[in-house]
Length: 115
Image (cartoon, rainbow, N blue to C red):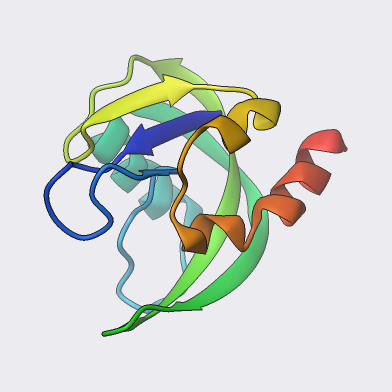
């Protein structure tokens, strides 16, 4: 799995997360998501399915996020906004400091990966 590290400066600085694409509130179309993810990471992926929707509250705003299971197809990682990246297995996620919103879908991700 690909995880990326946020820039050290700013909100949640230095924490790790799965690649994320800001959304505008409209339903996610696979082709649009795949195109935006390629622009952010340099990778071509195929969106397999939506795993879940999470809601998380920070002190000054609320986040709603759709979580998708994607499969790598091609490309090399080329990050736009992240500081660093790692390819890891699910079992090594606990070695990295993930921000709290990511913890809300780890159980669903683990089930999906075990299928």
